[in-house]
Length: 430
Ligand code: 2PG
Ligand code: MG
Image 1: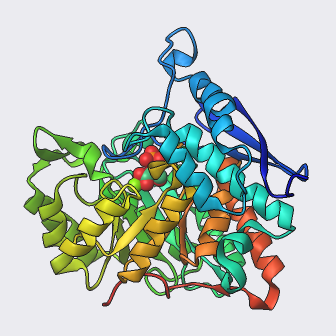
Image 2: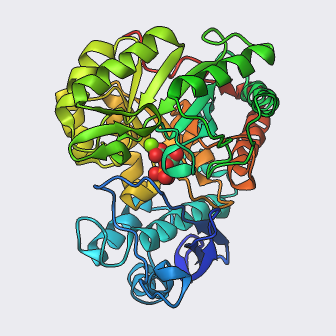
């Protein structure tokens, strides 16, 4: 007789992500008949060293972005290789996926195909045991609700305005529960809409559900966040921190960082001074990707001077890859990891990166992508690993609120056992 948790069949289909581009959803069926679905997100400001996402390139369909080959790979080769493996042995399944692919960047079968199978396997295993996914991932100790990094103003590759910094976020760490943090964020978001409208700006949304007004300067954008926070009745710095994702790899132009909104073209040293001036002036608690994906020296120098008061987050620098992370730890290039499952392509490797970072004293932010789906796996991943921080967009658009709403449900389910991470997980002052 087939064991209840053994993988019996795989189905895949092409669905749409939040930008209206195709992506892949995978459904796993286990021996007991348990079925679970996972959908894979996609980035816009992707790091040069991310695992390879497979796209058909057929210009007749979705301008080349179709994922039919990835779907076929799941239902053909991949299914043949993993059928009969036990979904409880996530590592064995993920190893089999990697071995079958055979490339270091997952380019043969596609990281999108592999991740869909990997995540659906975990979801099915949890379901079959009758336990929530965070419990399957984190065991009995999983009870920390993450502080949300809420992206209220969108720029860079996520909006068609002139803001150079990609993400202007608020972090309501001073709240006492996740639910309270979410309420603060939503209140600030609505006050921000009023402030922008009062200033004569449109309140159209960018890719991650934050507003994308036609502002030019980083400072203007930060000032709007501070005013909205205050008018909503909260203290910037004390209760609500500011966080930026510069996605600086996107700013590189002929070896210089070009800030078009401010008409500057800076060397790494000049850009570092620019960030330092902002941190001096505003309650910024965290900056992600302040330099390009391979500008290791700039990262190292910046972390040496600012790492004691600022969380410095490697996203495109680390791409959730243990080898790059090991180098960053050795060189002290950053003090935090942004963990995105689709950058590396399997759940096990994502967990490896999170564990490696935590063991070295780096903090961890579990993160969405700018192209998302209704899938809420990252909410459970944040609680399951106790990351204490999550980045999942603004307070609008269903693909973003799906994760927040999942976290509300987890907090509710944990009852008095739930603990909101607040400022605790933020890496600074050390
Ligand atoms: C980032 C992400 C998510 P993208 O840079 O951190 O916010 O954007 O998915 O476009 O890479
Ligand atoms: Mg980023």
